[in-house]
Length: 273
Image 1: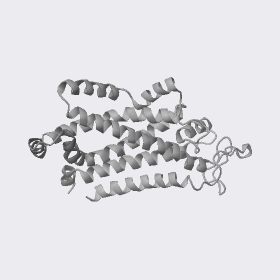
Image 2 (image 1 turned 60 degrees about the vertical axis):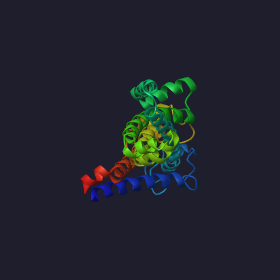
Image 3 (image 1 turned 90 degrees about the vertical axis):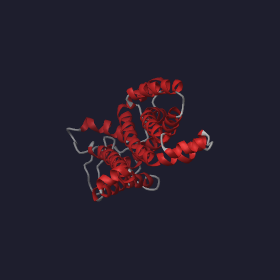
């Protein structure tokens, strides 16, 4: 029990810290993140600039704070899309006849075979790099595993006695979904959303690093790593800061998902106890 609570608390704390930085970016930053000052190029950490400055003399801490907007907004909207699509497809296919379910499962398997970043790169090659393209691509790619897990769990729920009793009493499909399936999926959906958030953050950072994500001049953690890595020999500590921000956020969502899974899954709870 103690270990499970520690995982949940640490994950929630890291996620809360990332969200706090995101909210702070709308009210305060040490400097204007877009202000260029060539005289301060690659300044090391100091009392004036806690994390130093980049090649254009911009304050790195300010850019990391504002860069949280691109990362977290893309992640949140992508997760909303993937959960809406994935849950809808998973529930619909599980309750559909075999001739509908089989082609749908085949389509989900095809999406599962395509890495999230690869699908995003293909879409950006067609529609051009932008935040909206990254959001749609990540959301579509992440909807496949959500649909797969949801379908499997709905199949199990449909075999329960209370669902059979509801069908016998004349309850329609929509009522069964609303009264029995969705309430029993709640714990799984929380865990899936947390895991999808971690993947979405990594995908957004990767796309920005490759130049397919949030376009400049808006700061982005992935693009900061790409621009600072060329000065790795001169100032090796600078690429560490945006990378650390990504690691903290991804680790937080992963630990949060593990903690929620252990706390909400009765089987794991009995094993832990």
